[in-house]
Amino acid sequence: MSRILIGLYTLLLHCYPPAHRREYGGWMKQLFADQLRTAQRQKAVPSLLLRTIWDALKSIPAEHIAALLNRGSIGVEWMKPVAWKHVLFALLPGLFMVASAYFPSSNDPWIVVPMVGLSLVVIAVSPIAHRRLTEWALPTLGLLTATVPLLIWQAISWRGGGLPPTWWRVVNTGVALLMFAVPALLLLGLIVQRQLTGHNLRRTWRVFAAILVASLVFAVAEVLIIDGSPWPATPMVGPLSMALSAPFVMLGLPLARRHGMRAGLYVVSGVSLLTVALIDPDYGLWETIWGNALPALMMAGYVVIAPLLMMRAAQKDGKVRGMLLPVGVVLLLGAIIPAVIRDYGPITVVYRLAWVVQPCLALLLAITLYDELHGEADAQAAPVADVPIADKVVSSNQPGEEHAFTPFTDIITQTPVS
Amino acid sequence: MSRTAQASSEDHLPLSNTVLTILLALADGEKHGYSIMQTVEAMTGSQMGPGTLYGAIKRLLKAGLIEETDDRPDPALDDQRRRYYQLTGFGRRVLDAEVHRLEALIQLAHRKQIPGASGS
Image 1 (cartoon, one colour):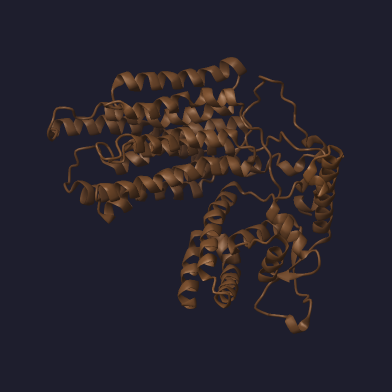
Image 2 (spheres, helix red, strand yellow; image 1 turned 90 degrees about the horizontal axis):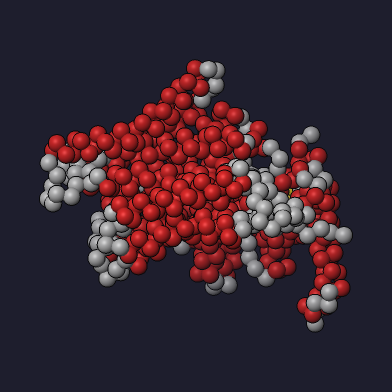
């Protein structure tokens, strides 16, 4: 029994980042074996297993985030939460989107247009009122970037009843590919141009290749597994999913460059990540005993809860967790719940989970490209630890004053020690 | 010299609970991972999992607050399979600074006559 449990824990260790596993995996395994030995003597193995699972759930994302952000600090890193009035204002498009789940068809223009309009208002107010793009506008920017092409794509879906004719499939696929492929080609052009002008983008090319391979796999999987025919009724997901990553990166690069930190990129790409899964917003749950409540709730995870937690976080880790945890939960539920209700096969469930890979690769591409273009300087610039303790007192923003988007370096609340 | 070595002890404050309890566990001598975990459990009543413990240890090593050591508290207890850790001088200063910070907060609570602060 012990060997089985230790073997399972060894497998679990593969969920940690490779560098962390290489350095500490052996010690962690030994520690678990020690704990297990003690627990067996005390007949407390079940509680140890529960604690270990909880520990893994907490520490695995934390280590990946630490690796991603090159985080080395050991202290609590404080940040300024976005003011509630701005949070609520920024959440309006997301709230409208969730409410639209109760309308008969969420693809109708009279729902799409107000949602897009609200998003544009939110984004426009930020530079008008504050002369800069503030942090609270970024989730909406991500939402809009990810949602509008998808809504357009859904709006041009076949409404004639029955299977669409071949000519329509060709036109529809062409339009969709054009819509998504143009930014993808622009991104490719940018990478080639930077490579030719002296930048060494070796890692970027690798991630780009990984996206292409993943897209190809998705495309083949969709044709062979999902649709069962060589010419699917909808545009192939694989190439689209690859192209989908492009707008996020294109949007994130100038923002990150302007604000001088990879965090800007991370926020935009991350929030865009949330809405990619909206390509299948109902999760196959319409007209079930769950009604519209469950799809609306799951959508809220992407477009309301995650941005809310992210904007109100007072610590750097809280910001990242606030963004990623609701997404992880909803993505998981989005794969599992329809499988149970609609009796999907296991391959379809795996295919749905594979959707998570695509936005993660887009995020990785954005960060890698930014790193290789601008070096590590921005990531290491102005860390929290460089600020003397005496200066860590609240920077006393006046009521109503919004500060610039500096999510990973703002220090706002720190009780001074006298 | 690394940036972390140049940093002052206050730069790392406030410490997270995990880090504080690990530093406290190492305050009375070098320990290996399991021993740290047992000491933390004795101090706080709650167990720390391997992922949390070694994640914190990695960051403490990187920040220069602890270091690996070949010294053993008792040769009889030595276990070559284990890796031992001890506080560095800088780590001890950070721990002192954090304790002083917490003491100052407690004193502040006393001055404000907050009931829990008096231990009643």
